[in-house]
Length: 199
Image (spheres, rainbow, N blue to C red):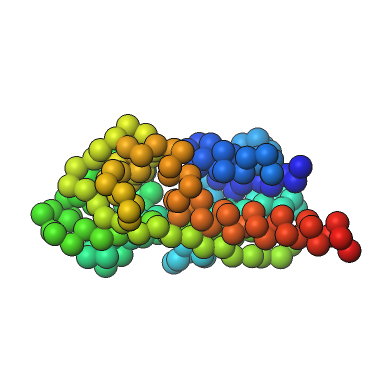
């Protein structure tokens, strides 16, 4: 089974990705390989931040690794919070404060269209590959549901009437932005393995 290092210390993301990887890949977090440092996200886009994090881990381990940068874009808020989604309400990175700030800025605005975006940077044998995923939806006026994390309690994906936090992990993991980006990365890696075996 192929091992990949996930350049993250976010326990929610780590757990989610380990489920999505199923039995095809063994995922190790930064803490599992002994990296305790916080990676400064100084990029100006999801792609730049994902690449920064992946390169940070690859430079220290020379192991195949990947990183994601993801966030919520609210169209009527000029795509805020965007790359600042995790620290929208401050460096404390409090998910509830972030969520409440979005709701406060939206107020009673009837246009509540938004999307979740995920960009993954994979470094495989020193080469960089980018995979992207998104899911569109609308934002509720108040949080709903007990599952999920981040902005999940206010995001209702297209085709559904409940928030990600109400739908639960099983549903979210079939259609989320991160699931879609990961599916592309896993497909690339599995097809690469097949080519190696048939050469």
